[in-house]
Length: 456
Image (cartoon, rainbow, N blue to C red; front, side, top):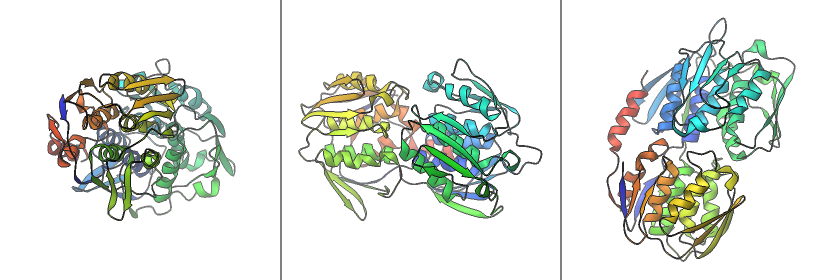
């Protein structure tokens, strides 16, 4: 699908999308909870739908309560004679979080399970499982460290040491799996996971926060270098069985970052639904906007942002690499050379984002240099409309669309429907704010499909 963005002036108020980081973790927590869970403000992105499909295949019953609420009731931990999945194949779609988080949880099952995915997920390195699972009693077979992966547990928590430099999502999966492991596999008073060079620490904060809200045993966090599960906490994990809890998916700072940058470029707009107290890593977009001298104000009803004369800035995105695309769109309109650290975190995304940003924004006349772990963006000289391609990367599509709002001439984005992965309402939201666009996605149809797939 193609969409054309014309130079536009934005105005109005828009609510940020639901956080897929929060939604997917809620699905995992609900799967290993013994309570009936009501999830309010559920996301409907492709990644969210993948997570719902996975937990249903592992034994959860998902039902629609109303347009803003779904219920999840799982018997995953209630099976006598050992845990088995409902089906023997799990499809993670193109969700990196799902495959890294749900694979360790699925490894708690005693039956053989094949983990699959599509798109860029088939090329991402998953050697982590080949290295770690045998230490935890899980048989594993992969295609040279890539999909498909076949596993057979049950996973048995042990004291281990892992590498956290590629992604914190592997650790998230182990934390959930350790918290859910059956009592017979709990040995000793404490079980620890030592982590070397952990990246994206705020996402671990989010994982621990979700675990706490769901009443799951939360490990002791020793400065992100060691996570200790105490036996007394693990033994209480089934307290509250047959009770209910409600979890509200918070607004998404990752998607909200594009709206805020759009406001800084072509506003004024107000973005609601984003919590300043959130543990989401991409909340740091506020720091970047302030460093660029954007016109931003935190108000009771939301974040108000309007165009000003912006200047180049320096920013460390090592722990929030998903901010690179909106940061490039922002830096394009900042006078001078913006320096962003963390390029090494971009290689294994939906595309190699460092190179993709350089090439696609280069078509719009923006000069970007990559120097080891740093990206230098030469901004403030204006952009020109062009035909760009998302490379099937949702964040590239959104970054180009935002940058196009004040470019000279129209910008055509090819494979624009890549936004379905995380923010299917994106173009519709831009239109609501006054963006002049042609083409797009039938959002109401997408929501109907989501609600249908959410039913058991």
